[in-house]
Amino acid sequence: MRAAQRTAVAGIAFVAVLSLGGTSGAWADAAAPPSSTGSVTVEPAAEGDLAAAAERRVEAMSTREQAASVVMGHIPTTDPAALRTYMESTGIGGFILMGANVPGDEAALRDVTAALSIDPAFPPVVSIDQEGGDVSRLPWDGFRSSVDLKSDEPAAAERAFAGRGALVGRAGIGVNFGIVADETDDPSSFIFRRALGTTPAASAERVAAAVTGERGGALSTLKHFPGHGAAPGDSHSGIPSTGMSKEEWLGGPALPFQTGIDAGAPLLMFGHLAYTAVDQRPASLSAEWHRIAREELGFDGVSVTDDLGMLEASGIDSYADPVANAVAALAAGNDLVLAVMFTTPDSAARIVDGVVAAVEAGTIPPERLRDAATRVAQLRLGLAADGRGLMPCGDCAPAG
Image (cartoon, rainbow, N blue to C red):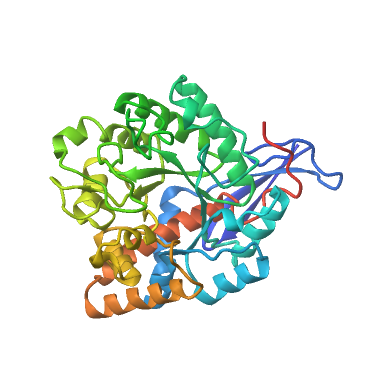
C-alpha cells in the first residue's frame, strides 16, 4: 500500500513516497522504530526545475549573500550550539567537517550536522574527507580503502564506496571529498597510498566504480585535479609542479578524471599543483585549467578548491594573504572556496568581505559570482530535494 504526497521545497517539487511496512533508500533503518509506519523515498525534481529554482534564488540575493554562499568554512568544535551560531552569523554556503567536528558516535554526529542546517529547504553543502584508510574522519568506517583496493577488481571499489557513501549520507553529510583520482606508481609519493590505481587506466576503472558506488549515499568529489601523480612534492607544504605537456596529460593523468566525470561525479576539487606547460599558476588559481575541465572534459558540476590554507603553508609570499587567495580562486572559475588551515572563527566573514570588495572593484565580474552562486544553489536545492536537509533516521543500524 502506498501513499504519495507532493510537497514544495524552495520553489521546487519533490515526491515523498511512504511505503507502509517497507524500507528503501540509502538511509533505511534495518529495523524501524516501533513508532514508525514505514520509510520515505524522496524523488528529486527534474534537473531543469532545480536549475531554474537556483537562478531565481540567486537573483533574489544581494552581492554579499551571493559571496557568502560560495564560501565553505570550518570551526573546530562538536558543540551544536556553537556550530549553529557560526552558520547563522556568517550565512556561508558550506561547511567542512574535520576530525575536530566528529564526536565519538554516529548519533552525536547527526546532532552536529543537524545544527549546521539552518533551513532544511536550502541546506548548506556539508562535506567531509572520507577516503577511508589514511584519510578517514569517521572512525567507524571499516570499509576497504585505496591501500588495497588498487590491487583488487573495480567491483571491490564500487562495494566499498557504496558502504562509505551510506555512512556519510546517513550522518546528514551531503558531500564526500573522498575519491582520489590521482594516480602514481611511485611508493614514495605522498599520494601513493591514497590513489585508487598505479596506472591511469587502472585508476580510471576504480574511480568510475567508486562514483557509481557512492551514488545515492553521498555526492562524489574527484580530487585533486589535474592530478598529483605527475607532479612530485606534497601540496600541504609547497606547490608541486611538472613540465608534462597537455598532450601527455590527456593520454595519462586525465583519464581517471574523465571517467569519473563521465560516471556522474557532481564535484571536482582543484589541487594546488602546477603543470607549467599549461599554466605557471597552480590549477586551483588557473582559469585555463577550469576551461579545460568544463570545455574539454565536459564537467558541468561544482568546482571546489582544495584547502586554500595549503597555499599559505607553501611559504610563497604571493600566497600569504588568505583573502586574496580566495578572490583569485573564485575569479579563476571555482564555485566554492574552501579554507581550513590557519582559519579562525572570523575567517569566513573576512573572505566574504574580500569577495564583495573584489566584485565592487571589478576584480571578480558580477556574472562570475552569480554563476558560482547559482551552481552552488542548485547543488543545495538538490540536497534538499533528496532529503539531505532532513535527518535520515532516528537510530540507524550499522552499515555492513
